[in-house]
Length: 144
Image (cartoon, rainbow, N blue to C red; front, side):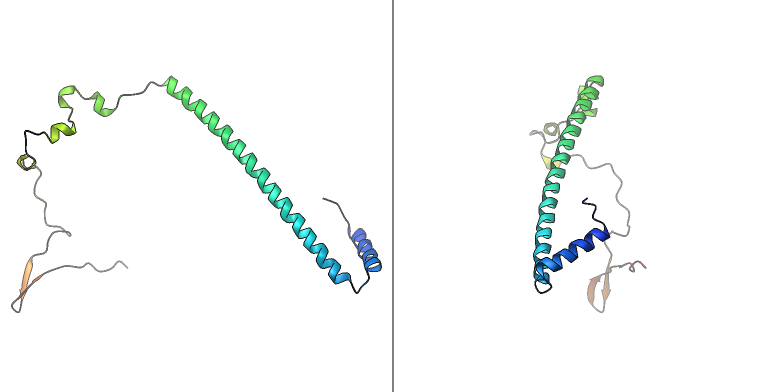
Protein backbone atom coordinates (compact mmCIF):
# COMPACT_ATOMS: atom_id res chain seq x y z
CA UNK A 1 0.00 0.00 0.00
CA UNK A 2 2.62 2.57 1.07
CA UNK A 3 5.46 0.40 -0.27
CA UNK A 4 7.91 0.98 2.62
CA UNK A 5 11.08 -1.09 2.31
CA UNK A 6 13.38 -2.37 5.07
CA UNK A 7 15.95 0.42 4.64
CA UNK A 8 13.25 3.12 4.81
CA UNK A 9 11.74 1.52 7.92
CA UNK A 10 15.18 1.45 9.60
CA UNK A 11 15.65 5.16 8.80
CA UNK A 12 12.23 5.98 10.34
CA UNK A 13 13.12 4.06 13.52
CA UNK A 14 16.50 5.86 13.86
CA UNK A 15 14.88 9.28 13.40
CA UNK A 16 12.14 8.37 15.93
CA UNK A 17 14.74 7.30 18.54
CA UNK A 18 16.72 10.52 18.04
CA UNK A 19 13.67 12.83 18.07
CA UNK A 20 11.57 11.09 20.76
CA UNK A 21 14.40 9.61 22.78
CA UNK A 22 14.85 6.04 24.04
CA UNK A 23 13.12 6.83 27.34
CA UNK A 24 9.75 7.85 25.80
CA UNK A 25 9.89 5.39 22.88
CA UNK A 26 7.67 2.64 24.47
CA UNK A 27 4.93 5.18 25.25
CA UNK A 28 5.12 6.59 21.70
CA UNK A 29 4.96 3.08 20.20
CA UNK A 30 1.88 2.22 22.32
CA UNK A 31 0.15 5.44 21.25
CA UNK A 32 1.00 4.81 17.59
CA UNK A 33 -0.29 1.23 17.90
CA UNK A 34 -3.60 2.43 19.34
CA UNK A 35 -4.02 4.96 16.53
CA UNK A 36 -3.22 2.35 13.89
CA UNK A 37 -5.69 -0.07 15.51
CA UNK A 38 -8.43 2.58 15.48
CA UNK A 39 -7.72 3.38 11.83
CA UNK A 40 -7.91 -0.31 10.90
CA UNK A 41 -11.17 -0.73 12.82
CA UNK A 42 -12.74 2.29 11.10
CA UNK A 43 -11.56 1.21 7.66
CA UNK A 44 -12.85 -2.34 8.30
CA UNK A 45 -16.23 -0.99 9.36
CA UNK A 46 -16.35 1.26 6.28
CA UNK A 47 -15.36 -1.65 4.01
CA UNK A 48 -18.05 -3.90 5.55
CA UNK A 49 -20.68 -1.20 4.94
CA UNK A 50 -19.63 -0.83 1.31
CA UNK A 51 -19.67 -4.63 0.83
CA UNK A 52 -23.17 -4.84 2.35
CA UNK A 53 -24.46 -2.14 -0.01
CA UNK A 54 -22.93 -3.91 -3.02
CA UNK A 55 -24.45 -7.26 -1.96
CA UNK A 56 -27.85 -5.64 -1.47
CA UNK A 57 -27.69 -4.00 -4.90
CA UNK A 58 -26.70 -7.32 -6.50
CA UNK A 59 -29.52 -9.11 -4.68
CA UNK A 60 -32.08 -6.56 -5.89
CA UNK A 61 -30.78 -6.96 -9.44
CA UNK A 62 -31.02 -10.75 -9.22
CA UNK A 63 -34.57 -10.54 -7.81
CA UNK A 64 -35.59 -8.20 -10.67
CA UNK A 65 -34.14 -10.60 -13.27
CA UNK A 66 -35.85 -13.56 -11.56
CA UNK A 67 -39.22 -11.77 -11.62
CA UNK A 68 -38.80 -10.92 -15.31
CA UNK A 69 -37.87 -14.52 -16.17
CA UNK A 70 -40.74 -15.86 -14.07
CA UNK A 71 -43.23 -13.58 -15.85
CA UNK A 72 -41.87 -14.67 -19.24
CA UNK A 73 -42.22 -18.34 -18.30
CA UNK A 74 -45.74 -17.81 -16.95
CA UNK A 75 -46.76 -16.05 -20.21
CA UNK A 76 -45.19 -18.78 -22.36
CA UNK A 77 -46.81 -21.66 -20.43
CA UNK A 78 -50.51 -21.42 -19.58
CA UNK A 79 -51.60 -22.45 -16.11
CA UNK A 80 -52.54 -26.12 -16.01
CA UNK A 81 -55.71 -27.10 -14.15
CA UNK A 82 -55.28 -28.95 -10.88
CA UNK A 83 -55.96 -32.69 -10.64
CA UNK A 84 -59.23 -32.01 -8.82
CA UNK A 85 -60.43 -29.69 -11.59
CA UNK A 86 -59.69 -32.36 -14.22
CA UNK A 87 -62.10 -34.87 -12.59
CA UNK A 88 -65.62 -35.09 -13.99
CA UNK A 89 -68.16 -33.24 -11.80
CA UNK A 90 -69.88 -36.47 -10.71
CA UNK A 91 -66.71 -37.93 -9.15
CA UNK A 92 -65.64 -34.79 -7.25
CA UNK A 93 -65.93 -35.12 -3.49
CA UNK A 94 -66.16 -32.10 -1.25
CA UNK A 95 -65.95 -31.97 2.54
CA UNK A 96 -69.68 -31.24 2.61
CA UNK A 97 -70.31 -34.54 0.80
CA UNK A 98 -68.26 -36.46 3.35
CA UNK A 99 -69.95 -34.99 6.40
CA UNK A 100 -73.42 -34.32 5.11
CA UNK A 101 -76.13 -33.50 7.64
CA UNK A 102 -78.47 -36.31 6.54
CA UNK A 103 -75.92 -39.07 7.30
CA UNK A 104 -74.68 -39.32 10.90
CA UNK A 105 -70.93 -39.84 11.27
CA UNK A 106 -71.24 -43.17 13.10
CA UNK A 107 -73.21 -44.78 10.26
CA UNK A 108 -70.46 -44.68 7.62
CA UNK A 109 -69.78 -47.94 5.80
CA UNK A 110 -67.11 -50.16 7.33
CA UNK A 111 -63.75 -50.14 5.63
CA UNK A 112 -63.11 -52.72 2.97
CA UNK A 113 -59.45 -52.94 3.96
CA UNK A 114 -58.27 -56.29 5.40
CA UNK A 115 -57.61 -56.52 9.12
CA UNK A 116 -54.01 -55.76 10.05
CA UNK A 117 -51.79 -58.75 10.69
CA UNK A 118 -49.78 -59.21 13.84
CA UNK A 119 -46.46 -57.45 13.44
CA UNK A 120 -43.82 -55.83 15.57
CA UNK A 121 -46.24 -53.10 16.69
CA UNK A 122 -49.22 -55.38 17.34
CA UNK A 123 -50.58 -55.74 20.85
CA UNK A 124 -48.84 -58.45 22.84
CA UNK A 125 -50.94 -61.30 24.26
CA UNK A 126 -51.55 -61.37 27.99
CA UNK A 127 -49.55 -63.97 29.95
CA UNK A 128 -50.23 -65.12 33.49
CA UNK A 129 -47.31 -65.60 35.92
CA UNK A 130 -47.92 -66.95 39.39
CA UNK A 131 -51.48 -65.73 39.57
CA UNK A 132 -50.72 -62.31 38.09
CA UNK A 133 -51.68 -61.25 34.64
CA UNK A 134 -48.98 -59.35 32.74
CA UNK A 135 -48.71 -58.19 29.19
CA UNK A 136 -45.86 -59.82 27.31
CA UNK A 137 -43.67 -57.33 25.51
CA UNK A 138 -40.81 -58.07 23.18
CA UNK A 139 -38.13 -55.40 23.23
CA UNK A 140 -35.71 -55.68 20.34
CA UNK A 141 -32.00 -55.52 21.13
CA UNK A 142 -30.29 -52.15 20.58
CA UNK A 143 -28.54 -51.66 17.27
CA UNK A 144 -24.79 -52.38 17.23
